[in-house]
Image 1 (cartoon, one colour):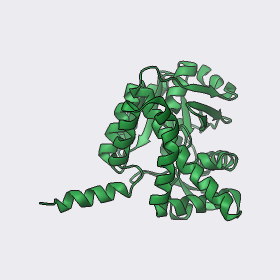
Image 2: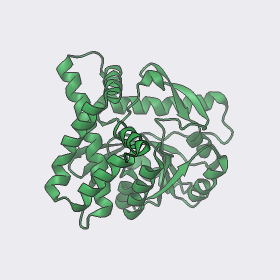
Image 3: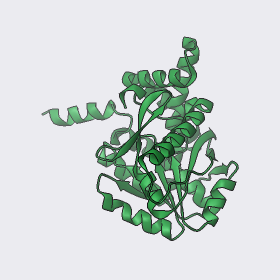
Image 4: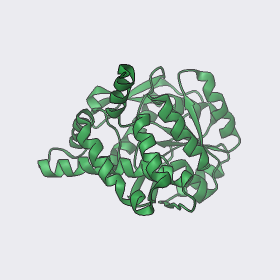
Length: 303
């Protein structure tokens, strides 16, 4: 007898780019496939994602127009395809680092002086990241290049099964991940880590449900920025270093740190708004320069 509930669940998984179905499919290919499969299959699967998920495709096209302005249809479609291909490649290579013996990462931090100066102050560092190329391995890059003690903070995913699969892979690669919800007490381990001189990497381009945010602007549109990193910087005294990653090729990534953002111990609302605005301005410049490296599959107008 056909299990209708299971068929509906499978159909729902197929419609979501971040479902456990797609994560397991990628993981199986990474574990058992030959290296050419790891290197070249993401192009096929990325294009398949883009073709099969019209809502996500339309959102990517609209976001590209916000960053680059109106262009010819072939140019827009080419860049939209590149977004999905880069997304699939980053996911595949992130899993390969934890599950394939001998997998090596070719990474670099471009102009890392702001990061090194912040580390030298001994108050810890809050690295403000985003869902960009290499978001899966940004913590591993900082750890391997600068021996930094990194905790990566991420929001809880829609699919708990997919979250567990990917978190296991990150732990296997030596990256500690903490998932935050809406409970302020969940941030206490992060404060303790910063006070030991550690690094906390937090994504700032999405506001998880139940978390406080400050309204800023991105590409001229209203945009909510998580308030947690700003509050953590105020309490700890740690500077915020915006640092966005980009994929350059197979297993090749760069981290681009920006000027530090400092939040006073008792910031006023205006000072918090200023810090949030600087974060979004840095992200906006990065996306304009690297439009196919931002994996935001929602329309900016809907955020």
